[in-house]
Length: 533
Image (cartoon, rainbow, N blue to C red; front, side, top):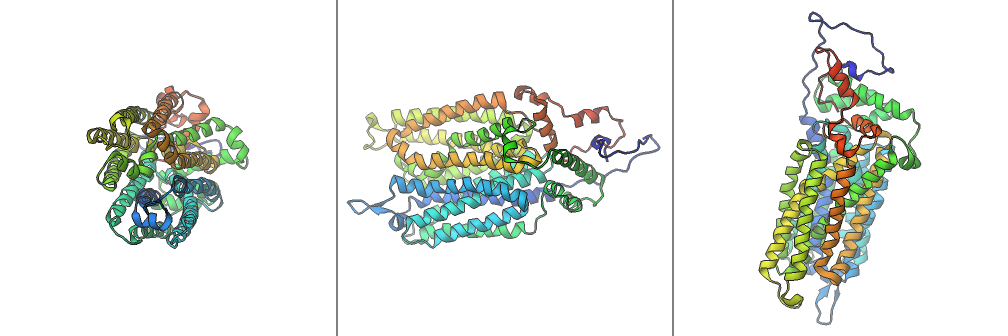
């Protein structure tokens, strides 16, 4: 056990370490199992992504329109803007409520059981949807309930991953939640593409029914997963935490690596419990700098939505049908593929270049893309601005190109890293509440974008993109001045970083006290455990 992990609460007699007296080497720590564990938990992101990928296809399928839409004077079925907005958008309202449920369950029953319970909630929502025949409001109700499950998963899964992953891989493993979202979106697009030519209700019921499979796999699999060690320590189940850490790291129960990691977590829990039970008021007014940290968490999540990605993912099929694409379903599938592949790049760069550089670089690229997309769309897509005339194909191709670049930039930076930043921002005793509120902000803006987009685009068309362009410009300024760099830090180090008051611009050079102690300790002391979390 490293002497750097000691505090006054855990005294230890001094030991003279010489060439003749050496501490035993710890067993080599394997990270394979903990990686697989975090990746399986990310299945919660797949469920969310698949739902997102299918709804864009549903609202453009003839059997769906015939079942839940209304006919115009010529007998053509369509979804009114209010009906389409509610079917798509109410999911986000449910998800907003789900974030609060997720925060409650995380503290009440734990991260693992919480994921199991909310997977059940999602399945209930899907049952309501798939049994609907002509009542569009039944679809809407089912999407609200399904949204509750997804919203809770968006809190519980990144929390579980961040508390389980080793610090040198935490960014990549929490980002895997977004990777599985993009995989789900791509599979959702692909399934809808495969069923779109069906003339019966199977066109939308088949992709809808597959939602059960993904949620059921998550539910059953999580039953066999270990609980988050940090949660177990927080409720006093130290030996269970030790067993969970030993199993996931594939080392002996009393290995020196486990001793050191467990001691660091215990010390953190002792400090936090000395402050008493966490309250909602403390989330806004507590120390160290809780109000500031909450504001950062909310803004990161809100700005992720205001980047405008869901403008394409929710209504991509409709948008590119308007541009004149012969097969808008295929175009959406291409976007889903780019989204998926780009997220793999995000897994690498988040821990290679850090959070700040990735967020800044991604926002700059997205700013340029939306500016070009919007300007070309309203100024050159239709001859003389007459939307009744056929769209210019060359102009449409330019818009699709910049949309692809935008999606690649978003998928590799803001999409995964927003969840990483929020999962690292709050101390253990406030983490569930803080993540619930911050992620709730994401879902509230998600609802506004999904519900209002049909109305705004019908009024101002592609000029709508300027709204997102301005929001991305603000995001660049916000990240530069306020988001600290947390690459390579343990969750306990991140807490110390915020408490220190160091500015975001100086944070890349900040050194935690644990690292300073390691530098000053004897060369032969057991301090070189860089993989401890």
